[in-house]
Length: 279
Image 1 (tube, rainbow, N blue to C red):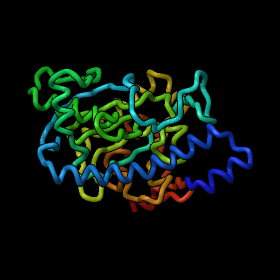
Image 2 (image 1 turned 90 degrees about the vertical axis):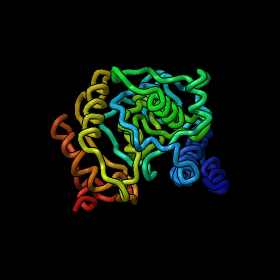
Image 3 (image 1 turned 180 degrees about the vertical axis):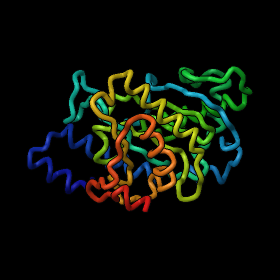
């Protein structure tokens, strides 16, 4: 937000705490683009940081680990509230994204070392294989740490399906995070950590993740009256976010299995109707 616009809104009586949140939200949108670009540059410098070669059917929950350097969400209200600088909402659905990072985010060497020496905390293990080698586990924990902002900018999605097939629960579902423009209040933000313009998806793994999120959300009081799936492309001029293949082979199949509805003609603001993305 420009200083001129900020002053103009302040003069017309907009609460300053709301303006401060609006400024942070707009800055976070620009940072999200830079974060994806910088992640690709970093991975070019250090191919070993990638988790693409790993496969780990696991669920890591770090939603309680909220000591993070930079806030990318509204402060949590005591009571349920949809307005102002403090918010708390029950979600009616899931808004799907891709990270736009080819091969997904990588890990940082010093974060992996922090996992190994115990100076970086690991998330709660909700689903974990009976046997997994130490290096694969370390990379999985280090990637989750990167998402929450250890040694890098964190990302504002509630859940991330990683390139190593791990599902990371990143933010409390009651939080209103700045992940998807007009979908922020009412939708959990789910991110497929990949670039849909360049990569094919592991559909069954992603469908499993979506079903897991729906079941967990329902146990926590979300999706009670309705369940709706939407995309960031319906709220922005980014038709590849998360892309036609994801909509066809993940969203639509998962919707059938979970009883969710998808409005193919949905378009909000400068968004793309979902129907045009898959046509």
